[in-house]
Length: 283
Ligand code: AMP
Image 1 (tube, rainbow, N blue to C red):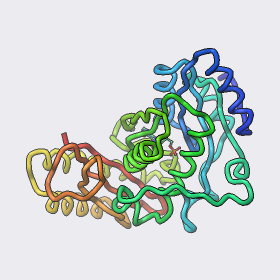
Image 2: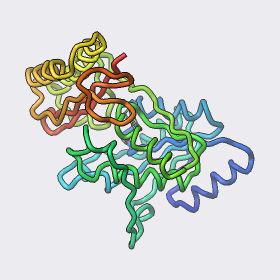
Image 3: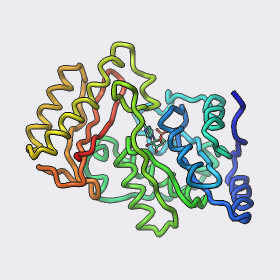
Image 4: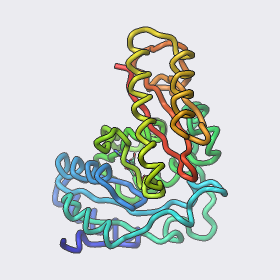
C-alpha cells in the first residue's frame, strides 16, 4: 500500500494548500474523522472525491467531545494506517493537527445547538455535542470546503451540524451518507474493536431489533410497545446498560409516540465497556 496523501499539521499550511486549489477553480470536499478508519469512513472519502475535484480528510481525536469518564485516552490511534487507507479512497490531503493547534492557550469559545440535543445521546453525554459543533465549525472555517460529509450512523450529530451551519450562515453543503454495516448488520465503528469475540457475536442484535421495530412502526404500531420489545431483546442479548431506545422525528429529534415521517428508531446501549449507537429509518 502507498503511504497515502500528504499530511499537514498546521492551519496555515492547510489554508495555503486549499487556497491554491480554490484559485485553480477546484471544488473541495471535507471528511472530518477521529481516525481508526474503517469502510464507513472510506465511503465518506470516496463520496467526497466523486463529488468534488479534491477530497481532504481530517484526523483529530477531539478532546472536548469526550466526557470525563469516556475513552479519550484509550481511543484507537494509527495515523500511518489511516493515511494509507485514505490514499486508497482517493483523498488528496490529510489534516492531522495537534491538540494545541486546534485549542491554543486562551481558547474560550463554545458553539452549542439547543433543542436538537435535548434527547437521544444529549442527556447521556453532557457537553458532547457542544464539543462536536465547536470543532466542526472550526474545521469548516479552516478549510472552507464546498461540501462536508458526515455519516447517518451518528444521525443526531449530522442534524446538529446541519443546524449549526444553517444558523451560523456557514456556506457549505452538509452531505449525509448512509451507514456502512457488517454482513450481520452491525454498524461499522472505530469502537467495535473494543468488543470481545463474545460481545461481537451479540452486537448485531442491536440493528436487527431496530430494523424489526422500524418495520412494525411503519405498519402503524405505537412506539411504546415497540420500544418495550427492543429493550427486552437487548436485555436478552446481554446488553448490560441501555441508555435509550427512542422513536424521534428526523428534523427536530423530538420523541414521537407514533411514526410521523420522516422519523427513525434510535438506540444506544452498552456491551461491557463498549457503547454502541445505531438508528433505523421508518420507511
Ligand atoms: P468518527 O471518526 O467516528 O468521528 O466518524 C467520522 C465520520 O464517519 C462521522 O461523520 C461518522 O458519522 C462517520 N461514520 C462512522 N461510522 C460510520 C458508518 N458505519 N457508516 C457511515 N459513516 C460512518
